[in-house]
Structures are given as structure tokens and as C-alpha cells.
Length: 69
Image (cartoon, rainbow, N blue to C red; front, side, top):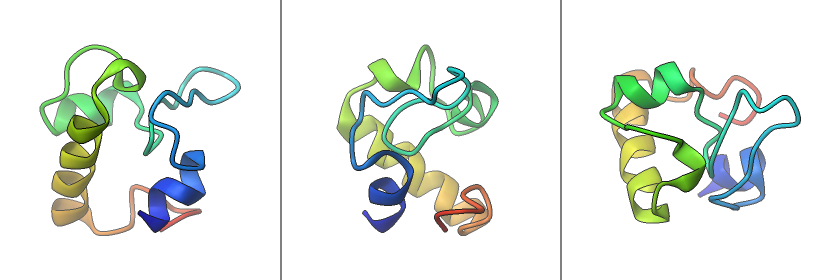
């Protein structure tokens, strides 16, 4: 929850100013796909975003979130 709060204010529909990072955990499309996500992370259900962020965290710890991890 702390990562989501820092990355997006906890908003699952959040999109970065340049559109590169999307959703509650500010996934880029390559990272989202690497944990099994399809489509736009910001359009995925919040529970799916939470699940895929947990998978990423298990694999890589906080390194995918260098500012907020």
C-alpha cells in the first residue's frame, strides 16, 4: 500500500504525465506484461493491479519502484 500511495496516491486509474506509467503502481507496459498483465494497466481492475504488483514485488523487491520502494 505504501508503494501505491507514493506512486499514484492509491488511484488505480492514474496515468503519468507522459502516459508511460499507468495504474495504481505506475506499471509500464513491458513490466505489466512480464507479470501476466494484458491491455492497459490503468483500465485493469484494482484487485488485478494489486495481484500483479505483488507478483512483481516477490520477484524483484522494491527495485521496480526506485523512488517509492
